[in-house]
Each structure stands twice: as C-alpha cells, then as structure tokens.
Amino acid sequence: SNFLSSRKVLEESPKSAMGLTGSHLHCEHVKDVSPWTTEVIVVNKMQTSVLIFEARQHHDPSPEHAIRHAVQPGEHAIVSGWLREPHATLYVRTGLHSAKVVKAPNFGRITISSAPHGLHVECDDGSVIMEDLVSKDPENIPGSDTIPMMLRNEHFKDALPSHLPAATGGA
Image 1 (cartoon, helix red, strand yellow):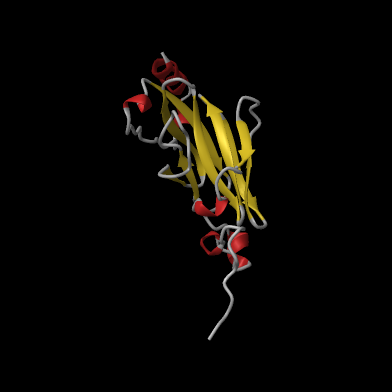
Image 2 (cartoon, one colour):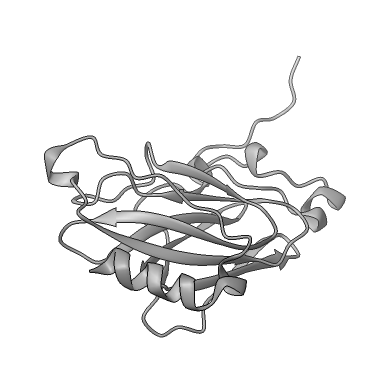
C-alpha cells in the first residue's frame, strides 16, 4: 500500500522526515474520492514562503478553487489524494505573466528558487512533468513576491492578464 511504503521510508530515514509539513486531503465529489495518496517533496530555497496551489478535483484539474499551500523555506511535503492517476497536479506562479503546471508522482521532488523577476521551478526527477500554464490566465494565480521582485517594486498582485489593457492615469 502507498501509505505503508511512505511510512516505511519515513521510519527508515527519520532525519529526512524532520521538518516536513503535511497537507490535507479534500473531496467535493464522489469521483474525487482518494483511496491513495501522492506525496510531493517541495524544496523552497528562497528566504520567503512560496504559494503552491494543488488541484482540488482529480478528474478535471484546474487552478480555480485549488487548495492553497504556503510553503516555508526548507523541505516540505504536499500530500494529495488520487483515484485514477497516481500524481498530484500543482500550480506555481513563476512570473508576472507566467505560471507552471507541475504533475508529480509519489515522492516526486521539485525545487523552487528565486529568479530576477519571479520564481524558478526545477526538478531533477524525469517522472515529474512541468509545463507552462497556457489554458488559463497565469495572472489569476496568486504568487509570492520574491525579494528581487520587491526591490524592483514588482508585485504579482499588480499584474493584469496580458489580454487586458493596462490602466492609464486619468482625471
């Protein structure tokens, strides 16, 4: 069983489990019932927390109404339930006009670091799939401003979707 194997790994390596934080499982529809779980390891190399959103509906993943995780610096786990596909779907805002969709299997590992104008998301695990978010406006996914962004007075909350006109000064 998935639970027993992950428990065995954590019991065998208690040092690696120290500091890991868990997630919660959520179910809105019967088709989202999750008898198994996927644990994704997130390594946040920044000095600030990062927002990661976990798809709430396993049958139709979407960033809308996703489960919000504020991942503090260090190594943490996001635990996601699954029924048909043994992976978690995560969304990360990476720039003012960009975001990533991450599909990670059990014990998939992603690393997040600061970039000049946002976040850099990477993985060394070939089983983790990372894509640019193109089906939705990335600007609708909240993000965590990085220190380099703050020094440039750039803020995720101020970025409008690229198809909307920028506000101009007026009377």
